[in-house]
Amino acid sequence: MAQETSSAVEVVNAFWQEHWSDHFTGSYKPPKVFDASGFYDVESSRLPDCGGDVVGDEPWEKYNAIYCPGDDFVAWSIDCMDMGYILAGDSWPYLVVAHEWGHAVQNRLNVGLRAVAGELQADCFAGATLQGAIKDGTLKWEEGDTDEIISSLQKMGDITPWTNPEDHGDISERISHFDKGVQGGVDSCLAR
Image (cartoon, rainbow, N blue to C red; front, side):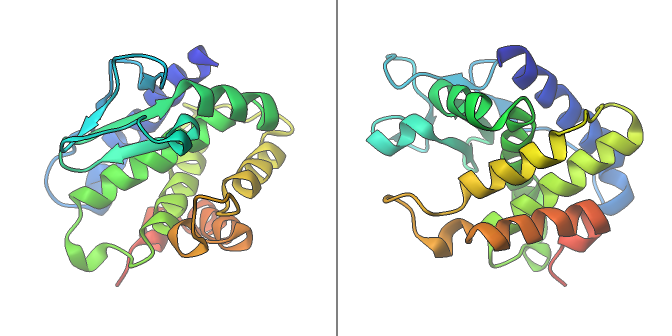
């Protein structure tokens, strides 16, 4: 799981380095990856600090991944990645990393290009990124990975007691927006 996550960071970053100027002006700057690996452990004293809020202090953060806009970093809990890897398969880290990176991309956009439903836009960017990486040849999709992604999106829908369906969208919205990015690429994800 740790190796797949490291590979996901490389693949996602390589996609945006290669294609940023195809869609946006200015130069691409990747977000930082917390503690070099992105992992945090809620049982540890080394937790991400996002603008003074310590990530990992709340019970629900044990199974979470974040993008911190103020400090421009991505992070994911070990428990989140372990659980997803076991339940959804080896494509889970790619989806999580691409989604959180999608928030970093949003943070770099003009306000007019950001969707009101930011979580769904991040799902769309994740779909565009992973499909684009496949086309670029930097990501090899195995048989069954598409099913794993759909299963992952079903598990990521806001159906947990601590989330609200308006935050990330329901299962069908998440799958629809991810697919929108797969089919239409980065430009299809932009609000216009």
